[in-house]
Amino acid sequence: MHELRLARDMVGKIDAAACERRVVGVKVTVGALSGVSADHLRRYFAEATRGTSAEGASLETILGTDVAAPNADCLRLESVDIEE
Image (cartoon, rainbow, N blue to C red; front, side, top):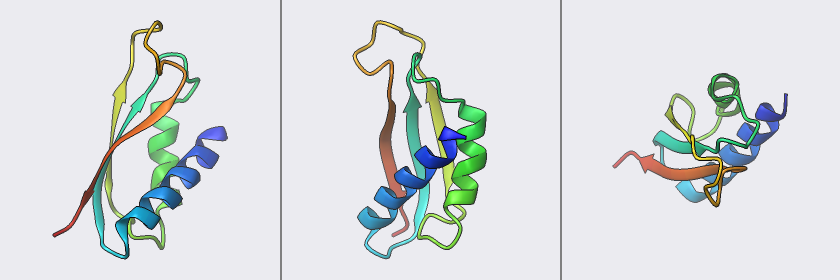
């Protein structure tokens, strides 16, 4: 269930950064040691975006495989695509 909390936190930041513009895509890296399920994150992302500027946005997840990477224990927001 912590993926739901992570998704809600991430969507809050995305929504604030979008400045009332429509978000069409989001890319995140799921660190190899993060303990985050990419499948669960995608499911909860769709739920967390309801009623926000990111509702309906696609979520691309990049799965980290290097356990020695500096951010291996993190979920990292890589990019936010905003409709022009």
